[in-house]
Image 1 (cartoon, helix red, strand yellow):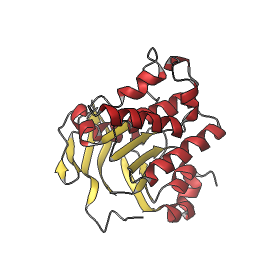
Image 2 (tube, rainbow, N blue to C red; image 1 turned 90 degrees about the horizontal axis):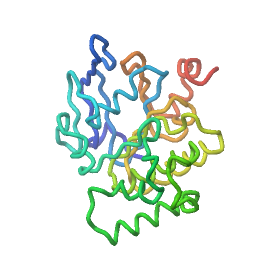
Image 3 (cartoon, rainbow, N blue to C red; image 1 turned 30 degrees about the vertical axis):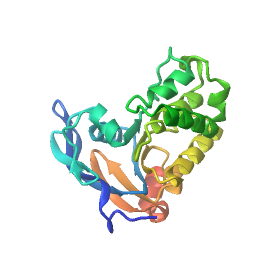
Length: 243
């Protein structure tokens, strides 16, 4: 596994601040993710994790700081430009199109592409990753279970052939068995070389999956280390592992 401190980061966040009115949700954070890494951002609800991802993907505008991707400043770019650059977000709450079929939702992930033959091949590939979606291919996405919708959101994201995959709380509201399946698939996607930034309240699962982690509290990053070290850290174990 690569270490963002030793190579040029694929993603670099420098002094990022985000404010909603008079509330400072993100207070000048710095972190980096190297190409090929799996990194997690953990913290309690309200710590600023989702806001950080929204700032990275152009869904909210930072009040200060910079975001660099593959060496270029992307801070001011709109979301659709970021997708075309190879950045994909699986949002909190899944965000599927409920009235479209599973098939149509998957193909929406490839809207920036025009290589029809390869799109079809990738479509078939995601159905092998998520056999349950193949069984429900013509079913309206709004009728799927929460776990199936999470699978669909991930499938849609990887149809864009992302270089950087951002995942926001993929385990939220899911049964343990479904969470296990989702995380196994995330691991398989990362194994193909897709750089991954995972925002997750389930710190244990996230740290077991990822190479490194950052702990976020009240809009600030308060701790960072290799994932095994964070799992063994007494402070992390007390605050996030219930020990």
